[in-house]
Amino acid sequence: MARKTKAEAAATREALLDAAEEVFYEKGVARTSLEQIARHADMTRGAVYWHFRNKGDLFMALLERVRMPFEELAEEAARLNADASPLETIRLACHASLQRLEQPSYQRILSILIHRCEFFSDINPLEMQNALAQQCFDDILDHFRRAHELELMKEGLSPELAARLLQSTLGGLLHDWLRDPERYSIVRDGQQLVDTLFTLMRR
Amino acid sequence: MARKTKAEAAATREALLDAAEEVFYEKGVARTSLEQIARHADMTRGAVYWHFRNKGDLFMALLERVRMPFEELAEEAARLNADASPLETIRLACHASLQRLEQPSYQRILSILIHRCEFFSDINPLEMQNALAQQCFDDILDHFRRAHELELMKEGLSPELAARLLQSTLGGLLHDWLRDPERYSIVRDGQQLVDTLFTLMRR
DNA sequence: TGTTATTTACATACATGATTGTATGCTTGA
DNA sequence: TCAAGCATACAATCATGTATGTAAATAACA
Image (cartoon, rainbow over all chains, first blue to last red; front, side):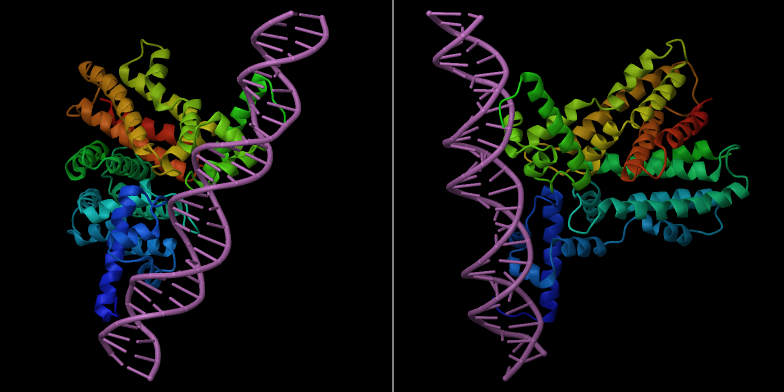
């Protein structure tokens, strides 16, 4: 093999990440070697070690390729018509987040992060999940607080409890669906679930 | 080392399982070797290979030591006073299930199954989780159907949706808590969450 | 009941394969 | 010409599975 242009090198880097995504998804992170990834991209381990320091570095690069869905929940909510009620804003943001999950790339990477990797080297996927969940919770809570001030929510339902209820529901749905994404549509069933919950929580 | 009596041999088997539970929990399944388990129990790999065929066999034996919490949800419900309403029965069964999780053994093994192991050999933890979730769902749905016939639930809330809502909530809570069990009490926060949901779903 | 034979319940040793990190070589674009 | 962008080669480690050794518990037997 000969030397390639900068664009070609960047392309092989992407190809390696694509290959890693596929093989990680199929076999799990721990049980895939760097050579399996390289060969899946029609390369050798030399290319992998040129672009990445090691498996952990490759893994982090993989996660950085897509932004996490719930990380953008607040942005989605803000992008929607701002004159809607806070409850409607959260509900629509949930819908938008669910639609994100239909993209295979999101689904595969979340599945890798949640179901297909244990600790390794200095990377702790549970801490990363915790950080995402915490940020999601803060965003949701913020909107519920405003909804509460406007007396939109059922009496006796505190913003904190509402936020925890919604986060648990979304998290449970996500985990359940990711275990076998072919079983049902996350958008259809998820939106129905979210709508039901909001109907119950609305005054 | 010399030969031991049958009782002593059974004790070392339990000690090996205890060691596996601890080391799996601390380092994840993939990154712990059989020798690490053996040395943690003050044994050698010879003992491990005597009592178990391989790592997968050891893992399965570990899971069989405790019954899964939601597997007994129905039994718990039946054990409680049968003259309570179906909704109360499910709610109390949820409480009992949450209390199960406070036992360190349950917490650790569920955490291993959910967060600390990928595929390996012929064992697929995701399928095992799916089986547990499906059985839990069926049990819950059964009770909600009866509650629906008695017109105990909010109008427009089908038993199927109610069951999915409760299952998602419980699953989301479980996953969130298992990521960092020291953060809050699963019994206190979980029961509050469940009670809130039932208040919303009750007519 | 005492003696012997045979398993049991491991420990130890060994062979093998897999994976990793690095070192080095090679080709060509800039 | 030089170094980017890989491929190839090498050394070292690690985990696994199996084979073998062995002391004592237990069974067999007289």
